Each structure stands twice: as structure tokens, then as C-alpha cells.
Image (cartoon, rainbow, N blue to C red):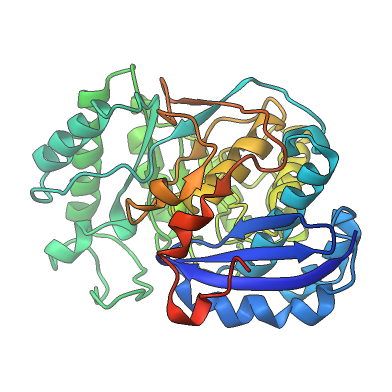
Length: 396
Ligand SMILES: [Mg+2]
């Protein structure tokens, strides 16, 4: 089998990759809905892929994996990898998890990072009220992640919470020491949320990046009695193109709260420091940033050998991304906790894709399906209605 074309269409806000072969089989991959600007980046790889056998996924990936970087520049390579597995599975007539080593579990646990309700304010009571709504969500989540500190609006509402200049500008890297008042405010919000959840639903916290090491340690120690599932991206993380493993190690060794990072990191090589130094307790690569699903599986195995858990990031990964998470999640080792459940945005995404269970999530789990490849496909007649003029020939 040979690759004859690589196409990319922006559907809604998600760039979608389609790899076309000479045997009538197409494979699909997807990029986060926060990155509609990557279409031309995807097409950059096309000349490197034409003529390769897509079912030799690893050898095909050697052509492109060194030509990517940390988030957002690993996304195109990752989506292409996903599409290659989709083809390999379809060609072999088996679901992708079989090609990744086979099933460890029949149902894959998800956590809530994307089913959200509007906040009525930013007081501890507002956080508690909002958490109560998420607890009642129909997916029955057993683990909910909430943004706090620099990964939220918390500090933007008071000049007294940080020592630095807090800027509201989009993607501005706010960072720096937090005042006693700021620290107490964050802790009281977490306590209020935890009171709502009790021990029925676990609470994970996405915190930064931006905390100093001493503040991170103070926060973690103060939260120890609450049995928080993990503290994510305290120091570096989301869109930071480096890792700071030694600093994470200092925080991790200073507290009993599991420390988590990894959503921005590209390739297994860039997890070596974190994992070998046991600098964190949980890693959370995103299959749409790390280099794909086999890359994610490899990191899960290596983390497991070092006593580190796995909770993949995925909130913006879309419905093809969701299918990829389910396939690799089924085959992850037993250090697997849950992946971050992506929701289709806009809502019409659910009308253009077939193959997902209905409802998708039951009691915080997704049952693993057995259709070949990733196991989801476009309903082409419906999906065509959502293509822009520029992408009109995407399915042809
Ligand atoms: Mg995060």
C-alpha cells in the first residue's frame, strides 16, 4: 500500500488530516480546536510522505518525527501518526488497540476537563456551586479537573494576590510569587470544591504554569489533607517549550500530593528527564501534541517502569481524537488513571461522525469498540456541509 495524498481541512476549529492511499482506504487524524492555524503546517509534511507504506507506521514516522517540536508544533506530526494507525487498522481489519499490543481493559476511564458550566463569580462559594453542577453531569465523572491559580481567573480579580504585574492579555505568561492573601484564597477555593465532592468524586487541579518552587511546595503541603488527585503544571507546562525536571523533582519530593505535567511535551525523548529523575508522579502527554498514540503508549510503559502514573491530556482533541484516546487507553499499562474527555465543538460535530457509542460516557467510562482502525468515520454527506469553500474537495 502507498500514500498517494495528504489533505487537511479545518472543520469547525479542528484541522483534520486525511491520508489517502492507492487501495481506497483513507485514514483520519485531528488537531486540537485551539489550533485552526496549523493547516499549512500539516501540508508541509506531504512531500515526505507520498509513496510511503502507511501500514509501516514506525518507518513512515521516521520521515517526519524529527521535524516537530513542543506544543503547538508537534500537533501536525501527531495527527498524521493517528491517521496512519487508522489506515493500518482498517487494512488489517482490526481496531487500532490490537496493533498497539491488545487490550488491558474493556472500558477506558475518562476525567472531566471539558464539560463546563458558566461561573457565576470567583468566590469559594462560586467554585463550590460550579463544582456541584459538574458532579451532577450525565457522564457521571469519577474525577474532575478544575483550573486554579495562574490557570484560572483567580488572580485577575485582585491586585493583592501576586507580587508581580498580572496581565489579562490572551496567552500572556503570568508568573511569579504569590502573596499570603493569594495563597489563602486559592486554598479556600479548593477546600470549598472538595467539600462538594467528598470522597465520591476525585479532584485534580490545573495550576499554572507560573508558580515559584516555594509557593508550589506551600500550596501542595496545605492541600495534603484533601487527597487531591494531582497538581498539574505548577512550574512549567501548557505551551512552555522546556521541562525543568529538577525543579519539579524538588516540589514532588516535598509533598505527598501527586505532581503532574507533560501536555506540551513532544516525543518520548523529552520525557526522559522527568521520568528517569522521577521528577513528577503523573505524566499527561496529549496524543495530539506528543507525536501520536504509539508515542503516548511508549511513554506510558516507560513511566510505569519508574513508578509514575499516566493521565493523558485531551480536552480539545475533538471526536477523532476521542477515538484515538480510547484505542490507546485500552492498551495502556496499569499505571493508567484516566484521559481528559474531549467534547465536540461546535455541537454539530456529533452529527458528522459515526461510530461513537450513545451515550459516549457511562459512569465515567467509555466502552472500547471493535470496529477496524480508530473505529469512527465521517458521515461524508453531513460533513461536506461543514467544509469551507477552500476545503471543498477534502473527501474527494
Ligand atoms: Mg493543563
